[in-house]
Length: 169
Ligand SMILES: [Fe+2]
Image (tube, rainbow, N blue to C red; front, side, top):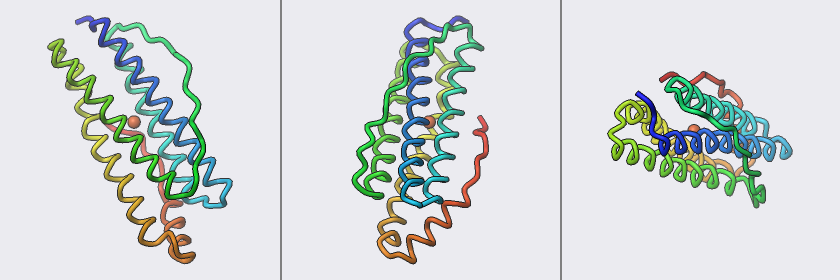
């Protein structure tokens, strides 16, 4: 089966979007590193690695299905973060946006009767639910504990413990 040209373009765009996500989270990590919140920095560094891995899943899928992939420029993150909470909220907003991108490709796969791609994307549909929940959870935790010095210290410590496990399809 050869992928439809329109589908290859969408998958290619999503590869780029995942790479941008990695870049955005790296920017968040950089922000927290500069603030001395190394746990938050670690959290977003691992998030960046996950996004890179997501991108590679699209990369591999396109190649495995004989599509031509093009590496386009990756946008620069806006980078004006007013405070810590704004960064966490930005992460949630971004994940909701990525969900909308994935959904759009699923609808297109359905239109094209491309069951293989629809099946491939099912993993990402679930992943996005998880990503949104995690981002929301972090906002809640910050609102509950982040405004108090001791609470922020404990939360930062908790986030420092996150380790990277490559995503399993
Ligand atoms: Fe992703």
